[in-house]
Image (cartoon, rainbow, N blue to C red; front, side, top):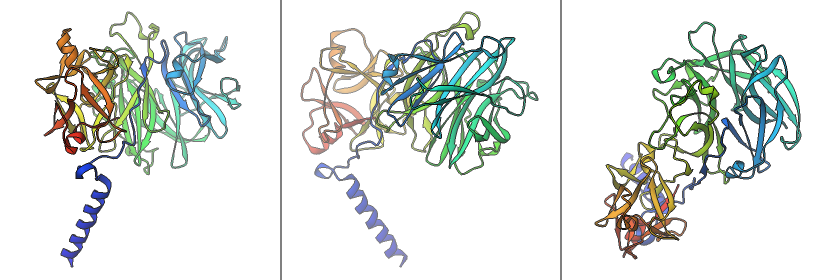
Length: 483
């Protein structure tokens, strides 16, 4: 009986595999990716730190951020993320002339809750600019840029101490607030807290401290955990947060909990041992942090929103340096269901990944500069390429490495390598391709050699070559999906 049951299970699995992966001439193939490529051009906004982008059901993205004057709350809206870069900006609230909410207006976030708009922000007082506390505005009206705004007051917590960076989210129907605050019993700047909410401006119950800065990368310059942001997937709650001083040492860590756990218990959360997102000298991006999450226009990709600077060295207090810029890039997911932040990519167009049509878990990547297809690529940036205008001719493209800017995918003796552009005509020609509809699936893409027409990038025994595809298998090997 056991043997017969095993045979039946095997037959069912084979049938399912044939149904899901049947392709031309029997070759295996992938379904069109659930999360196709999205690209943006960075930066989205100059001199805008602590960015928060919220996609609403009205078809608009709403964007707010800290302005370098620290004196007001601004909003933009556009139907696309890229459109936010040129959208007009409206000031919806200005600091008080005296007293509380009179200084250091920081880190606004905009949310839509139960039919009204809410902006969470931090502010100091005119008589003590470092008496930073969390406050809430409530907006009535369909468009927050023209809504009527009312102050709902301070969010009260356990202590009257330095507190900021409030964010709100819902898990299994329960609304939570998470924020950063100085615990008077600790020798650090801020730790992370969470509590349930009675309404959008009031917490309920005893707040739980779920993370404090104890690791070496959380304590450079200052001992900081701040800027929590939440994204959920696969029954897990992921909370990114920022750590260390707001210079080039600023970086992101990650807390993880089960969506069914008691989120108000510190024991439910585990912390990454290393930063998940940090400065990259290769791409000239420094101090990435204070992020939020949004989704792409088609709703199929998660998008990481954050600020950084384009230079490492800062004179004086980083808070007085106005040049933190808002940036975005696609957030990827590992096979184990955890987010892969990659690296802060270079300014300009964001990179893509290319999965194999017939080996669907494998992506084009470079390994010791040789191009190949491989699964579970780490680091992620080894499998990211910017599609840029062709080095050798108009109407063509070149594929520039994300983590080695100035290095391009090129063929050499018909083998594909990632090498530095040496400025020669030969290199330009070898690194230039015609972008074609996928040879095995028009929804995919194939890349035809510029200087050897008829030859295409294809994988063979997991390495990449430029060859003439003559069989169905060859054409499948030369077809990729942009992700």
